[in-house]
Length: 296
Image 1 (cartoon, rainbow, N blue to C red):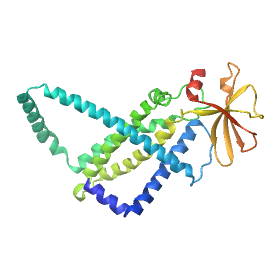
Image 2: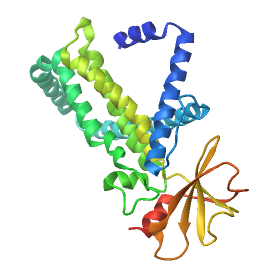
Image 3: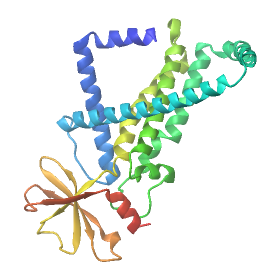
């Protein structure tokens, strides 16, 4: 960990550097989160490089991840407490014998394998599995507001469509904990100035893992509440309207026909601000669950 501390100090160069790097990190995380959030909904949006919303979105992502980590730490503390209580029920002589055997097995079988190159490739395997099996799966969610049929993969759609944030917290918190293991393996593989090929590859995979965290946050929060709007004279009175996106120049409104059997004709309407007349917000709803019920 001293290696990480030294590289962090060299990179930031003091409090001013830390503040600038933190702001840039929040901006980058907010941009990725918002960009993939809109792509998952199917909203065509031309995002600029600089926007105050990126900072707020990045801060929301950071706070959500930190609270998710707190939930995981609480679970791990509970598991540790149960394990400790169970171990107290085992007589001391048996505990000592079991501990001694585990220590001997570790020193004879595992420790000789813990050289920097092996540790690096172990981290590469863990990072590839995490990326392929979990973090990249959210990229399959596209055009959710106008697509027909349930989103896939189903296990991730369950997290997306959950009415609470608990499944998402457990998913992102667990992913960040595994990324932390990847960081520890990378730092260990680089100790004493060693720079094996596996360590360099692991560093690249680590950057990809970190970038996929705000992307997953943005995509998997696509089910958050949206505003139901009314008073749009240019739209049909036989349809419900939902405000999906708003920027400085344009609105994106989802129009859902109220006639039964016409769910496939729902559409996104793009209009410049002021062209739709006054808009009144009449309610909020998690819309994706409703659309999934109408289009199973």
